Length: 115
Image (cartoon, rainbow, N blue to C red; front, top):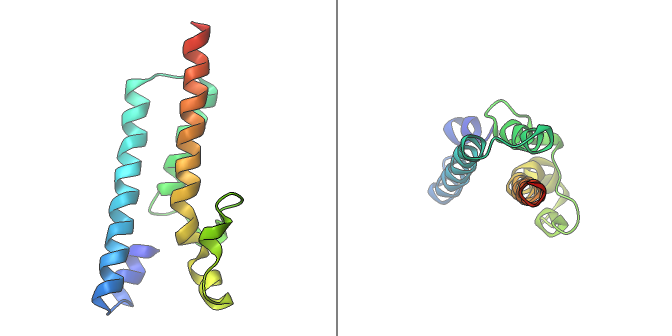
């Protein structure tokens, strides 16, 4: 969605730069998910968390329904209702993925303690 918007509807160089940075961050997070998968075999819980991250970061994921919840609702304090409805998923994606990764670390640490 973001790449398509950037390619077909975005003509402002600042907006293009911001969207490009967003796509690069998403790409880096996706690579991190794959790296974590290979470094630590995990279990059903940790593997499920990484699968959720990969799904969220997938190019085919529909961002329109994604909204960060507390403590990240500050990201949804956009200037107007139209902006919130159009961009809420984009500004919510990275905080949600980072929360998933923190959960993965917590679960992985629990596994390490039990070994």
